[in-house]
Length: 324
Image (cartoon, rainbow, N blue to C red):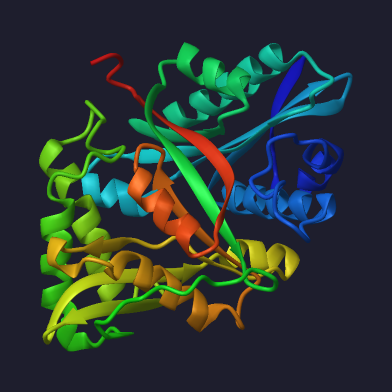
C-alpha cells in the first residue's frame, strides 16, 4: 500500500472514496443526498489542503483512505502553543480498515511534526471505533463525547415555552454583562480543554470567556440573543452559520453557538434556544446544537423545543509531550 500527499488539483481522485464514507456528519439529515455529503467532504479537504496537508492511501493506484491535518491559528495564539487538528478521516470499508488508518494517520502525524505542531485534536464518530482505536494507538487520549441535535426548519414544529422575561438582540452596551455571565458560568466548566493534562489550566478556564468576548466583537457569531430580568442580562446565546456546508451544497445550517444562563435566569435557556430557532427558521434549512454527552439538562432543552439527536462523536487530543 502506498501513501502520498495530494495537491488541491488531485482531490477529485477521492470522489468514489468520499461517496462511500460511512460516518458522514450529515448522514441522518433529511434532504442531504450522498452527493451532498461527498461535496461537503470535498470542500473540507480543499480547505485542509490550502492550510495543511491531505494524505491518501492507495491500493493498486486506487485511493482507499484519506486524512487531513492542518494548523489551528486561533487556538495556537490563545494557548501559546503550535496546535492543529486531524480533519477528515475516511476509509474505504472494503479495504483493510486498520491498515489504511495506520498508513494515513502515520503520514499525517509526520506532516504535523514537520510543521512543529505540538498538540492535535481529532474527532471520530462514536460508531467508528476502528478510527478511535487507531488514534489511541498513536497517543491520542479521549477528552469528551459530543452529541448534536438538529431542528428541521422546513418541517419541524417549534414547541411553545412559557417564559415571562424579555429576550432581545445583543447591544454593544451589553458586553460587560454578557461577559460577567460567561465568567460565572464557565469558570469551572469541565470541557475538553479543562480535561487536557497538556494544556495550561488557567488558559483552559479562560477559553470560553475568550470565545464569548470574540462573539461580542462580531467574531465567531452571526447573532447574539440576551435574556433580561428586571433590567439585568441573565443569559445569552450566540448563533452562527456553517458556511462550508452552504458553499458545498446550498444547504443552510445555523447554530453551533455558546449559551450561558445565571441561576436567577430560570427558564432562559430553553427560551433563548426557541427564540433563535423561531427567528432564523425562515433563513435556514436546519439548526444544530451541540453539547457534551453528560449534559443531560442541555439535551432535555433541545428536545423540549423539538430538536432530534443526529450525531455523536468522540473528541481526542494528542501532545508531542507524550503521556502525562
